[in-house]
Amino acid sequence: MKAQKGFTLIEVMIVVAILGIILAVAVPSYSSFMQKTRRADAITILSEVAGEQQRFISEQNRYATDMTEMGYPNDPMTSEEGYYTISVANPTPTSYVLTATPVVGEAQEKDAECGAFTLNSGGVKDADGGIDCW
Image (tube, rainbow, N blue to C red; front, side):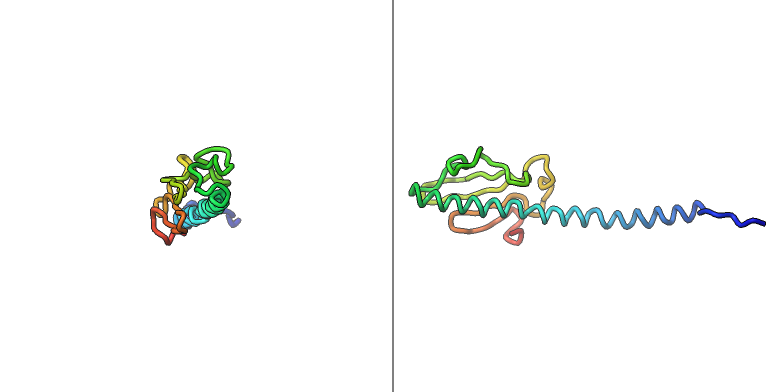
């Protein structure tokens, strides 16, 4: 008798089940990791715009009331990676609050853990999910 070569249906189903379990664990972990990584986009642009506000007040003796006053192309402005929109909220001549809000339809919109980030003229950092997001 000649020995048959190949896999049985049960062996194939076991491999498929193992792959399904691995994917069920790996995909959510990867998605969570990528959300955390994309938060750097908000933190970077908020820090940059805060620096621009400091330059603006040194020249104009007041804080800018919108992004275009600081030389950015539009208000609100989209971050470099495109995950957040940045705007100046509650501007006064002596204070400001910068807000980075996730762009609707982009990956960070689903970041329920942190949501929007803020940075004010006093250097106070915050996020919808708390300071741990920074």
